[in-house]
Structure formats: C-alpha cells, structure tokens
Amino acid sequence: MLLFDVYVPRGALGPDERQALARRLVEALTTDDGTHASEVLDVARTLAQALVHETDGWFVGSRPGENGADPADPPRYVVRVSVPGAWRKRMGDSVIERVTRALAETEEAAGRDPERLWNSPHATVHMLGISEGGIGLYGKSFGADDLLEELTRTYRQNLSQGKVPTPPLGRLLDPVCGMTVEADTDLKLEHGGTVYGFCHHTCRRRYAEEHGLREQLVDLDALNG
Image 1 (cartoon, rainbow, N blue to C red):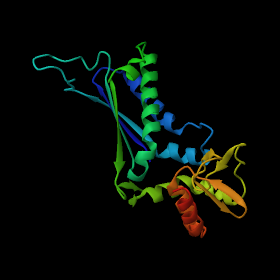
Image 2 (image 1 turned 120 degrees about the vertical axis):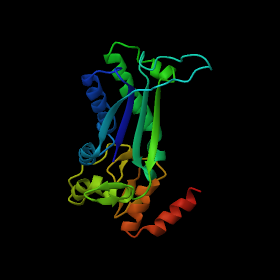
Image 3 (image 1 turned 60 degrees about the vertical axis):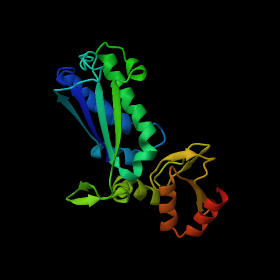
Image 4 (image 1 turned 180 degrees about the vertical axis):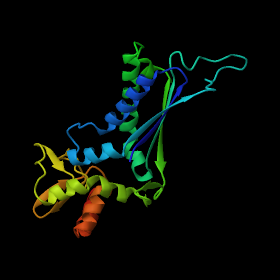
C-alpha cells in the first residue's frame, strides 16, 4: 500500500541510521492513533516498505558561478511516497507532516537541529499517486478498491461477527475501513437502526452500494449541497 523511497547524499547517514529512518517512516503511518482499527493497521504494516538510497552527484541550486550548499552538511532529504492514485489527495497533508516528523527525529538522534526541516527547504516530500491497476500483489494488478478489500478483510469479518469495539462517545464507526470519525461529520448513513460515519466519500459510497442505500446517499448529497 505504501512505498517510501528516501534519497540522502552518500555518507550523510550511517547504516544503522538509514535502517532506523526506514523503520520510523513505516511506523509513522502505521502506529495506532486511536482512530484506526487494529486489524487494518496489522495488514497495513505488512504492505508498507521503506527504501533508503544513498546517491552521488547531488547538487543544490545556487547562483551562477557559485558551488552551492553541501547537500550532506547538514543532510538534505528527498522522499517519494507512492500510494494508490485515488488516495493521494486525501492522504497528502497527513503523510507529509508525518514523514517530516520522522526525518526530524532522525536529525535529533544524530545531534543535529531538527527544527531546520520545518524552517528551511532541506526536506522535500513528493506524494506520488499510482494509476488504477498500477500496483501488483500476488501476481495480479490491484486497484484502490482491491487494496481496500485486502486491508479491511479481517476487520470486516470481525465486524460481521460483532467483535469490533463500540466507538468512543462522540464518534461514529466507519464500517468500511474501521476508522472512527467525529459524530458531527456530514458523511453519514443509517442502516439497521445504526448511524455510521465515514472517513471519506468513497467509503460512504461503497457502503451504500453494498447495502442498497443509494437513495439515502443521493438524498444526503442533495441536502449537503
């Protein structure tokens, strides 16, 4: 689901530092923050990978005739995060913030100033959306819906058997992906006497289609403009 490609100048980080950075990046996106189903996070961890590349020939732009800054002192970072194209826009802000925080933790652990990554253009994060069907697992192409099914299969089985915890007061359960959302969200549907909330319109639409609630979906969309 998630692939991190991290580029650092050769020699800027030692082997242990590169391994620790890779772990931080995966954990930054798969650690329980209280809003995700544990079953979904367990699967997400098995699908997330981080690769840290050392590169030569790194040049930081400068005025003509100048040598430019040393990209290794302090280290510059370029991070490319590949996700399904349908997810890129809604994930962007959160992923970029978490990736930058993981890089800052690496800087702090090395005794350098982590604040520079928030105050200077020393870390660039690219969110790359993979086109539909452009991700392969188990020898076949996967689209965004296929990946969602892969991530949520165990959670949804537990939900159907009544094994999913009740959401905290003031929050609603997204029955598609297992997130809990604020109870005042506009993305809601009622089914079987239960009101569900949804993290995104794609989850709400999928649930409506699976449970014959398309009319309710249309009515709510019209009400919300």
